[in-house]
Amino acid sequence: MKLTTSRFLLASLVVLAPTASALDPSSKLSSPIHRSGLNGGGSSFTILSVSNTNTQPSTPSDFGGTTNIQYNYVNTIPNAADPFLPHDCYVVDRVEQLTPGDTLAVLTNCHNAANASGWVYIEAQDPEKFKEAWDFPYLIGHVLVVNSAGGTYSINMIPDSQTESSTLALEFLAVAGSSLNIAHFQDPTEDEFYIPKTVTLAFDIFNDNEFQLSSTRVFRCWFDQPLSVVSPVFGEDFLRNNTPNDPQELDINCDNLGDFETGWAKVDAIIANSQTGTEYNPYIIGAITSGPASMVDGGRVLWNCAK
Image 1 (cartoon, one colour):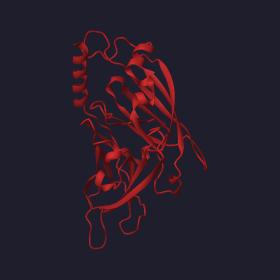
Image 2 (cartoon, rainbow, N blue to C red):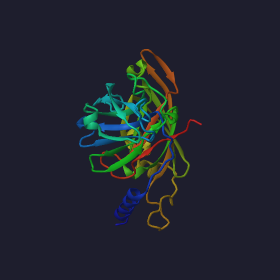
Image 3 (cartoon, helix red, strand yellow):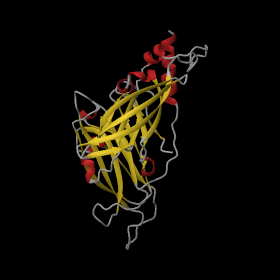
């Protein structure tokens, strides 16, 4: 009964724990995940919300705080042989207008018009011109995802100032069944995006007793996979049975014995290759989310370790 009780308490604690982050409004926002339709993850769906915090009213002579926003859904074509190397990725774009103080929430199954998963990038554009980006640092947004197990998680979108990093960090709870999603961050409005590159990631993984392990993973464009699939090193059994772990770490029933394995990891994007060239230290964005069969420990953007 100890394990069953511990798991119940753990689930309760994680579901109730609030998450918060201090972010600045931006002209450009990105989310490392969206799920749209059957190929986007069974019955999973995504609500994408964007708000305009500029409340300057429009007048007969100008638009005031109004802006256009272009949604760029970066969709992947799944590869059954290797979920880390989709056959290709492509962009579906939509342009909407936000009036002063406006909020627009869309179900991506409808808005994306593609039965796919991937990441999404939003850019403010001049409402008087056709698809021309402009400086409009007033956008905020988040995605709300309901996964196939009925679990719900939400993550804030990432402002442009936080996307220029090739090194990210994450914390994990091995038993939770969390998923890791990472996107090779490229501006979908630039021509070079349409040549997807293969990115090599290097993981430095530390258990709850500062014992260091390492792993690598190659991906193209975007992936969303359970941590234990990304590397077995993230697994509960591996950490408990193959590393000098802290026997008192994460004691959730106060008996001075650790119940679950925890840790953290640094993720470095080393190199990106395509037929047309090589990119060193490519930019990446990512998040930890509830896995397809999990309802806990999901909903946080990875830490930016650029500094």
